[in-house]
Length: 589
Image 1 (cartoon, rainbow, N blue to C red):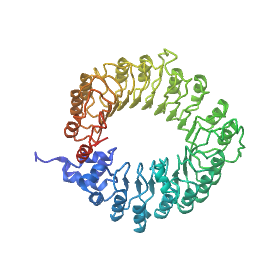
Image 2: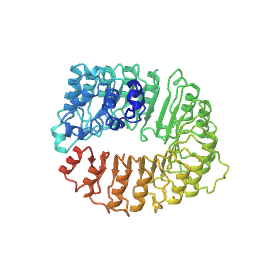
Image 3: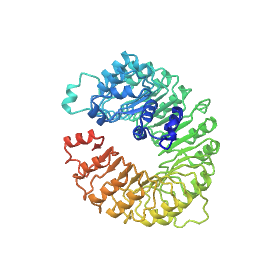
């Protein structure tokens, strides 16, 4: 029949396969509006739920959603403002067996909610708990976590804010345990979380090597440790973790420069058998004294090494790193050499011969590296997908030969803060990397509109472009060549209303637009781009002197897809206004 739709007869199993191909759970929102059948299917297959402030404001609780999405395995409460204990209790009262819970950026741990989860045995299903950047995190909180969730396999307690409160609050709080995480708290975790496989304790300033020893001895299945920015960790702790954890596959850490600098600790004895028989796959060291002897022991251990990071490390030579890369040239696919001052074009070109299998490399803040080295990487590393070369000297060596081989694997390129990067070099980069999808040129002062237009013609698949602080740009938008952009950061540029209209007309699929500090545009230009970009979710108008907060209500009601707006003036948005916008699904902050 003419009125029949052929897709109505498509089996639900097929629809599940189609919907599972969506790269973001947010796309279910649009799909569920098509018909009841797709609403039912999207409800059934959704496994992740992000609890936002508008959700609570409109519905009062999350219970109806917990009953609607029967397959939920992950709940995110990142930055949620409200009664966290209440929300966690609602999760415990549901029929769901949640496996992943993220409460990052909260004021503290919901102790009562966690205890209720543990009492109802719902905590036994939890495998992953993420508590990163919590305002206050104490040893006692770690005890609650260990008691309530005994089957945890991954725990992230990184970078607590350690908000100690006012002097008055500290005096009142003097009888309870300090508002910090110490070795004592980590020892409790190590003794009770026997199934733990991954832990991130980065940014906890009061833990020492003792914590690494306890974790490595108490958690026999431990395969990943991240311990960056912990001031009292040393290379002894590093060696203890490697020695005691036979299953250790990933280790990230740094040691204090003050206590373990090259001058005060010129040579640290390295057991040649330290790495032998280990499963170490990822090794990321930062600001540490790494000797050639240590690199030699890694070289001789025959590890399944795929990722190596030596950011801002000292103490080793070119010969040391070269001998290591020669051995692991067939397995290594991720290399981070950020901040290695001794690297030159000549030395890096020599090393690139052993980086054939590499898919990621970071050379940020390697000030001696320039264009010749970049194009050598393009030729010697055919599988590179991402290159980070911020704050280098790319472009300083002028014109490069035209006989440059294309590299169709490169998709992500970070070239921010390169003061020598010119239009000429940029165009050649675009020619060599025609499949670029993400490009960061922020604070590249020599780049002009002509260079941007030319690279847009070369790289038609671009979905993310960052031009923040490129003060040499003017007339942006006119002839804009990018049609597939999803993210456009153009902070602190001069953009006219006409330019915004062109950008909106070309980039109709835009999801995020950053216009912070932009001049030359009016409210009319902003309205035009918002009208044309029907999928826009985030808009930043902070410090746009030509725009007033009067536009906010129009934006929220005219574009229902908007989920976050940064207003021109934060202070003049009242709390009742924010709440009104929240009820319509948009955070204004």
